[in-house]
Image (cartoon, rainbow over all chains, first blue to last red; front, top):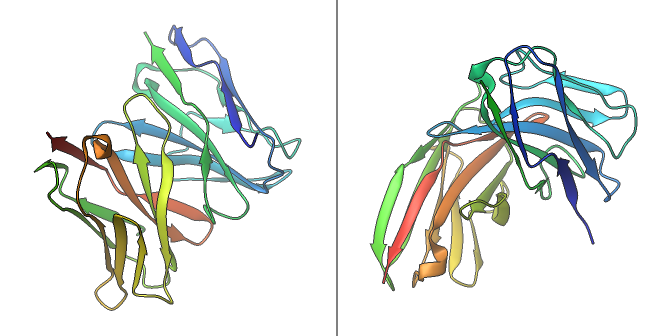
Length: 113
Length: 110
């Protein structure tokens, strides 16, 4: 079954404690990206990756890091989380940038206290 | 800059009526415009998309229209049903990125 898998689904952490949200896809997609979803703001892209070892900033990259060492994995790293990073995060993959269809992971609900 | 504006932010319709959601985009070079549906607590899923070489596309009760001159595109849902209640997002492709609108909460009242 084609899927994008994120872990964990829910996470509560404290300010400043480094965390990683993992994302893995089994569709051999070139393109992967991370979004955050906040009420009234829709989905905003954090980082994206066109292929292995190729990553670039999206619209809201501050406070986040990513890596793409393997085609299937695209982890999101928060080196020093802050309360304004409390959000719902989605990983997505597609053959090309957003097309023909972006497959989304289940989402990770992050709370930073 | 890259921007997608979506209206309305909330929409309530009676079951069986039609619903229309409109989006405008800023870059005339954009060529791909998908629509995603997100049910409560779930991930966004593609419901329909359109490319710039066509003006309209239909799939059963949903249709999308595109006006490249005016840089806007719309989602039309006919004969709405309670299961159509969800958040709908439009998006536009800008180079290597997909930029989303802020979303429309659609409520279908039975």
